[in-house]
Image: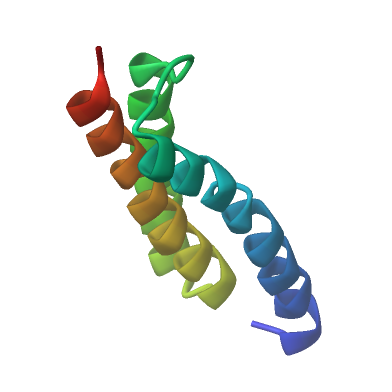
Length: 86
């Protein structure tokens, strides 16, 4: 894959993946998951798995990396949602 094109994917991956970090941090520190929809995050997690597989099939580093990290962050939010649910 052309590196000049892949750099756009890397920048997009960094920006979209880092968007989950504040929510994970806030949920972990406050032990509050109020307002987090378990259904939405489960559907999102399944979508991320498919994006990861798609990236592997295309051999696209940016798609693979973004979805590997996003998948871990979303999985952590799902776990926190289950643990801290009131």
